[in-house]
Structures are given as C-alpha cells and as structure tokens.
Length: 88
Image 1 (cartoon, rainbow, N blue to C red):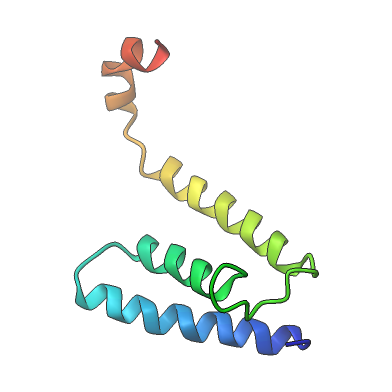
Image 2 (cartoon, rainbow, N blue to C red):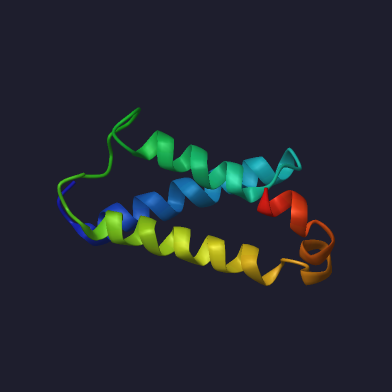
C-alpha cells in the first residue's frame, strides 16, 4: 500500500472492529490497540509500509498521550502513602 490515507483508513477500520469485539468480551480497549498493531504490522499481515516515518511518529504520539492519561488518573494521596516503597 503506497497511499498514506489508505493505510490509515485500514488501520482505523481494523482497530475499530477489533475494539468492538474486545468490548463484547468486556476487556480493556488497550488490548485491542495492541493486538491491532500486531496484526497490521510486519509480524502478521504486513499491511503497513514500515519505510515511512509517519507511523513511527503516530506511535510515539500515542505513547505520550497514554502516559499523559495515566498521569491524570494518578492519585497523589496514594503516592504520598506509598512513597518509601516507590522510592526503593
């Protein structure tokens, strides 16, 4: 596949359909995102051309957003209570 928009559409389509299936199983969506990356990437179907840097940038942005969301959900009181164990 050479068209970047076609690649992104395939990526979103497979991810959404896999996410719906994972939601029916009542599992977290992160599992769908990881499995869709494995299926679409060079390990199984090789639908995404790895020579372009677009998807590497998207992957890095996704990790940044995921860590940001984890940081938003962090309870500061819990961090204060478990400070010594976390520091060690």
